[in-house]
Image 1 (cartoon, rainbow, N blue to C red):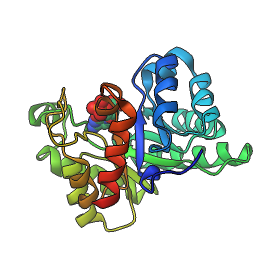
Image 2 (image 1 turned 90 degrees about the vertical axis):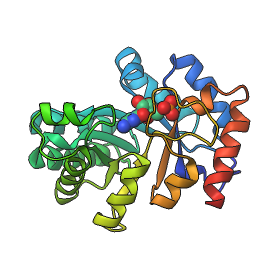
Image 3 (image 1 turned 120 degrees about the vertical axis):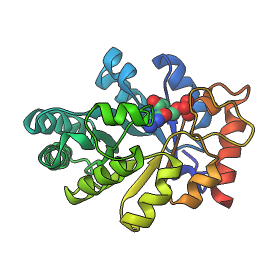
Image 4 (image 1 turned 180 degrees about the vertical axis):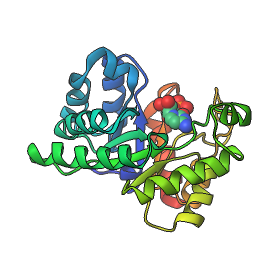
Length: 241
Ligand code: C5P
């Protein structure tokens, strides 16, 4: 793969499509996007074959399974993910410190057993789909942003290397948690693009300036008339931000 874009390692394609379409699309945009995000629907349908198919195209795979279970179960699952050679793996911070530590340990050991570099474990704090009422009804105290920061601190304390957050949260996470955590932001919409269900979306430049390391983008690329042009514009905006 020719690395045509310096921003390539900062862009992930959310391949929320049937596998064959997702693979075709990734091939089109791969010169601008180093990562392919395999989410629950692709993994439930195709399992590790979906991961392997993107890897064969040269993608680094972001396995977005949002694991949340007892520590032993998460450790076993994270080890299987590590053994697949994925680069990024998501877990829910709300699973607690022991579960988070187990995820990091499992991912590392699974990867080492197969000779892969350890994946970065990323913690999801409060789902951006949750309203203030949802947050309090599940028993989390404070406003959603306070709960998210509390969970982010917990994840960092447990040895998790990265966090999934909205571009707005990235600003406060960076300020409060410093330069170390790897921040990954979905909810990206180029200026003027359709927002869809992303009510709190921000532009690529906003996310980069807020401190995001990796931008996850789905619909603005795959619903574009010309996905390659859309990916190129994203990459240009990330490079200049
Ligand atoms: O199509 P779009 O660019 O909105 O895709 C964003 C991707 O990031 C989707 O795969 C979505 O599930 C995921 N995501 C999100 N918001 C979060 C966490 C994950 O949009 N808070």
